[in-house]
Each structure stands twice: as C-alpha cells, then as structure tokens.
Length: 298
Image 1 (cartoon, rainbow, N blue to C red):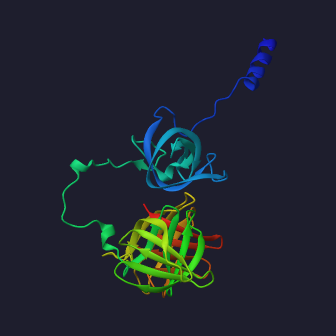
Image 2 (cartoon, rainbow, N blue to C red):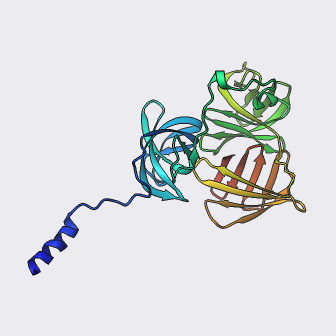
Image 3 (cartoon, rainbow, N blue to C red):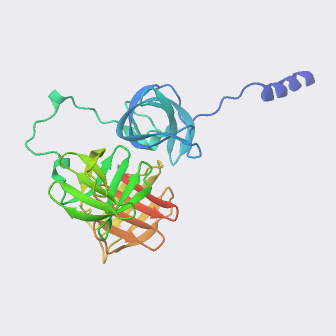
C-alpha cells in the first residue's frame, strides 16, 4: 500500500496537466470580423504588435487561448494574406455566438437585397466646410481646436501638427510651417494631397472615411457611450448635459474620472488638466500622461 501511494504521488507530478481554458475550443475555426486595433504576437498586451486591423476587416478566428482581459478572451486569428496573430475578443464579432467574444457579426447584405433609398449615404454629407476627421488606411487627420489639426498614425499617436489655412466645398487645406509641407484633404476625390513648398501636390493617401463636426446631442441629460481604442482597451464615457456640462469616464478601469467641459474650437472638449477627452462625431481623442489615443464608438 505504501508503494502504491508513492506511485500515485509521482504520477501527479509527472503526468501532463492540461490548462483550464476560459471557454472550450469546440466552435473553431469560424469566420468573424474585427472592429480594429492591434494584432499581437501572443495573447496579451505584453506581446509586440505584428499587424493592424481596421473596422469590419474580415478574419478567421482559429481558436481561443484561455487568456482573459476585462471579461473577454484573447483569440488566435488569421487575417490579411494568411498571416496569423492574436486579438482581444472585445474587439471581435463571430459568425456564431461565443461567450467571450463581444457579439455576433451583423449579416452582410448582398447588393440585390439592399433596400433602395433616395437618400445619400452618411459620408456624402461630409464636405470641406464641416469635416472634422478624415481617415485613411494608415491613420487619420483630426481637428484639435484653435484652427489646429493633428495627423495621427495607425496607433492613434500624434505624428505631425498642421494649421488650417482654408476650406471650400471640396477640401480642407492645411500647412505645417516647420516642414514647409502643405496638405489638401480632398473630400470630393477622396484623396489626401501632399506638397512641399511651391511644388504641386501629389496623392499621398486614399481617404477611407470622414466625419462631420457634430457634437453629441440627445433628448436626455445623460448619454452613455462605449468606445474601443487602438490598444484594444475599452473606454466607457457618460456625458452629463447639466450646468456647464461634464463627463465621467473609465479607461480600462472600474474607477471613474470626472472631466468638466471647457471651451473648444470644434467638437466638445472635457478636461481636468491631467486628462482630456475631445469628442467629435462617433469618435473621441483621449489624452493621458502617456499620450493621445483616438477611440471609436462601438
């Protein structure tokens, strides 16, 4: 009996132990979509970035990893031209319901099944006079108040700053005096044009989307909005239209921070000196001691 007990103890240490996953891998692979953000080399934010995805990019969800973050799991995915990596389930939708993926993807409509409408699509309502954000495959241009614009890279970080010089029905014209660089955000031809000095402008980026300068409005005094940020972190904001206006936000944390509304050249700006949130249309630019990120409404 004593010898048998020793064998049992040894077996407990020597036999392989299967990790306990947060959810079973019985439903994979399956098709899905990403809501944008970084693709990483492993299941967690500590792993390096190996790629980027944009809103509604198609992916194949290969399997679950068992690694949880804020109620959602990290998944191995295939994207682009057969590349693989990992993305957080809070930024994914799947073909079939799955507990640790944000939601089921909305069905795609074929051209023949799309309803006929006489109204123009939302993007056609954005022009040179009201544009506040302009997106391209490598980042975006965003108003920053006081006639200033910021060029943000694909990680939501500020790369360059510009002064707005002029607008017309088609375009917004920007200038960076430090580099003698001129830009034309041409909303009609859907191109960002680039020129140095007195040289003619040439196409730099294709415009993929644009947002008009609209301040969030509602019939109630409280508006709750959830955003997703480039790092894959959730941003939860509650706007209060009381007094001079303020908001409470949580950035990957249950703790809420209050920001009071302050004067802004465009959109709605909230700040407490340490943090600020600049709201424009369906996105916000959040500035923390670590830098600025642009987050998009879910």
